[in-house]
Length: 169
Image 1: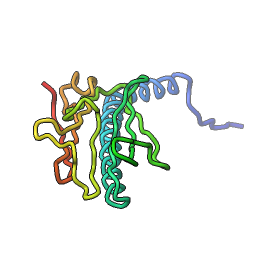
Image 2 (image 1 turned 30 degrees about the vertical axis):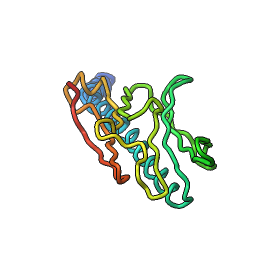
Image 3 (image 1 turned 45 degrees about the vertical axis):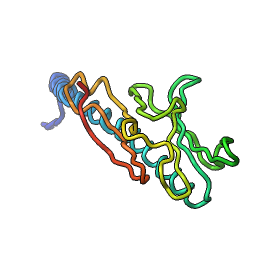
């Protein structure tokens, strides 16, 4: 009695695994690059959303609100505060601080030594300066691959925000 055994030999399996490994090796830089781009854009989008939220809360509550940037205990964090009395700032209940991934470089082009953006009850930026009005995130990995490695949020006196992609140097 003759039986036809169908199957794969060990050599055929090793060749298939090797081919899959080569394909994965060829595709992995693209996957890593895509993850870096998404991470950078998500981080800057979080900043924009936080700024829009602070503006909305200032208008809604009729109190000055600010988005504050702090790196006093390590990585940069961003949080929203409200001015409850003249010069007295308190955290806004229900607003969590957001951290900036350490792999990105944060540059603050803000008008004062207090790293914040202050919104009035009319939605205006109270500490606006035409020469210092942006927040920039930069990725060293993307710069090494000669890609647009910076994402910037520019804010204006009227409270509007603008998103810009660019390359450093």
